[in-house]
Length: 400
Image 1: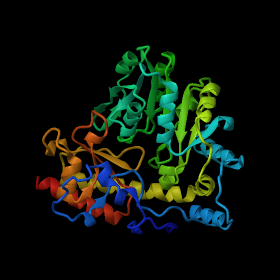
Image 2: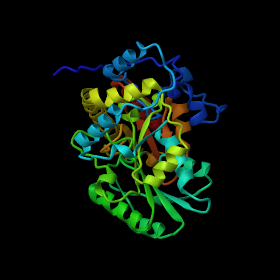
Image 3: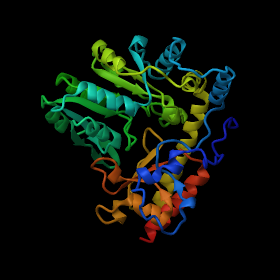
Image 4: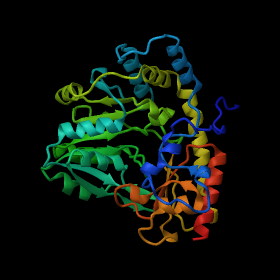
């Protein structure tokens, strides 16, 4: 069957205030960092921040255009229950999970919600647990709220990552440890946790009195033979698991700043709502509703395209960089590649590849800890971009 959507199309993002094109100096490097090297900055290939180089689904664009036919864009909120029911249906159809729509609140993104929730749930002398390597904003959220961060390193075995449950048991036994932030599927490794792993981790945390914030933003982005399980589905009697999902990663809508936060505990939800201004971008609301009601065909083709990109990356690494360690992840569009064989310890790989390959990517130093020698590559891009970016990366490593 021919493709309905044009994932091979290279979309020019210049002049759109795109973070991937305009914001990398403030995020990956110091603003005045010297990036002079083998490529001009205007020719850098962007494979770093986790949004896609694909045009979003035309069904979503259509819904936004239709909304713009109404001439008013005043203060808006999710007042119509249709959106909650559409999102509930999405979770029921895909994950066999029916949450109570009364528990659904919203946020300007999962990270803003995380910052708020940490501050609302943790006292200054309490601790937050994460597994590492980790998305850096989990740490930034604790720093912002002046709360101590406790890290538990994932164990890598032949390209697979597992939780060190003995370490988790020890750290959750600390009465000052009151909150766990858990990424499922995991960023940056792309690990899709099994039901057994989720049950074991969740049980230990809950039995020790921790609340769990389960960041499930990548839940829709699985390899085609995989199935996702929301952690809250496994603990239906607990009200101490907060689930965070969003259309942003799945449908490339990060700039719309709209996320779904499911808080079953009445007191926690009340506290969250008291501190949240429930005003949403009217275009974000209609885009999210269109994504969950009309976006399945686009997502199906996207996953097929990503599977091919991951296969290509694996083949090229095996052929040209045999000492790089890489396993195709079960989820996300992010590749977590161990290139430590080719570099000295503690080398700034983000800076190395900018200067020597003209490729913007994220080195392991950007993922809190337990990530030395790794790079994270964003594969949500047209094949031609992946091919050129990877060609440059391979060439730079071989010349190192």
